[in-house]
Length: 122
Ligand code: SF4
Image (cartoon, rainbow, N blue to C red):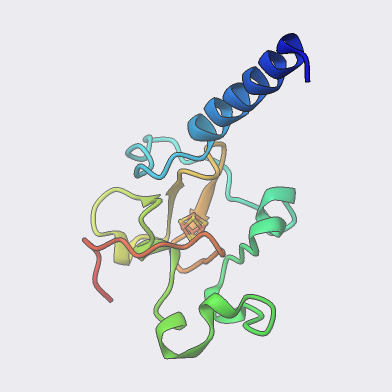
């Protein structure tokens, strides 16, 4: 492979990595603005890809096995590391999610990117 082609290949991966790191950061979402964002629709393409549902009790656990079983039943947006809401997150109706910066998600929603927030107990 030529040096030029090798350089272009590496540059492409670097740009892709930087884009992904900026878009999919695992840091908590910023504090909720005073004006709520529109709620995320389950028909949003990325929401569908990640299996987001506004009511976690309606997750198809045959398809999304991460939420199957007793441990899975405890997974909600409100106790996800990527969720942020003002006040008591467990009592929050909706809040922001790092993965969906233009929308808010339901506190009792869920998606397959769920990750336990160690600061929020069940
Ligand atoms: S489970 Fe977490 S990552 Fe998924 S939509 Fe809810 S807050 Fe966002």
